[in-house]
Image (cartoon, rainbow, N blue to C red; front, side):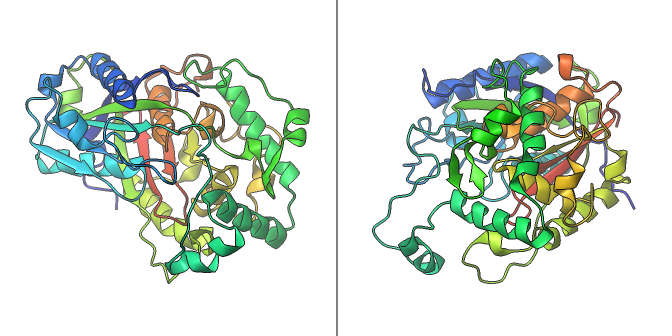
Length: 394
């Protein structure tokens, strides 16, 4: 039985700030640039916005969580003189940005507000990516940190090694995904690597970061912001541009036992319940999608979503991505904008923005003709990921 609210909520506007490797302006300026662009995209003003939602946590260890500097909380927008009519807000702590979109969707369904601004702002200072400094280790970290296993880079590397050995695959097969992402980013003006091509030889020669993860298997730390405006489908019909519609949305809520690292959990068991709910709510399955925008903070996460969401079987993802199957024009295009690997690390907001662009025919040279439904899977299947299905028609 499909979701009772399928197609009733729309993403009506999308806006980007400039995406930078080394920031030239405060993070708060990036957030306002993205919000301005999103509002202009749908023809609204700040007076129209009466709801706010975000996933604000700083994306690096040791952040001071200073609003307007290394994070953009709800409070940042509430303090803006132009933001006069907010009556509802939400600030998610799990599930990455798709959770903020879920909160906005539910608020609109409930009638708590009429127009919700959702954003994700990212700032990663030089030298902080994947690094952690600590003098004491408590809880689960007491079993890993004293031996140097301190960051998600290393946790994911351990999980990826286990995956390769369990299914008899090689890390060289991953080049198909990484090269596909870069080729798509070369067609995306927002991508940090828009003007930098990548070859198989480049991938093979890439510096090893945490075996078997090389530099090019990791997302690109950037400073930037993407914002979106959500409203009801009825209101969206009269707005400036054609919207994309929410067919299903949800979170990974699998029961977790005590853990040393979340990557020790089975990706298939953790991600499949979320995917099954999405397919039920949307009324179709992975084979019905025009594309998949699958999170790639680390390249193996895309493999885990391909399998747990049913695009292919368990242990088959590295074979699935070969021979052009995931290219634009292939059987199942994946990360048509370049993903976090080549557009930049925006914690899934770039994935959602690309789905909207494809469904509203604004993807330019990346456009999939007649794209009708796109799945966005955010975060890792093992760590409270979230996902949504967007469609061209309500």
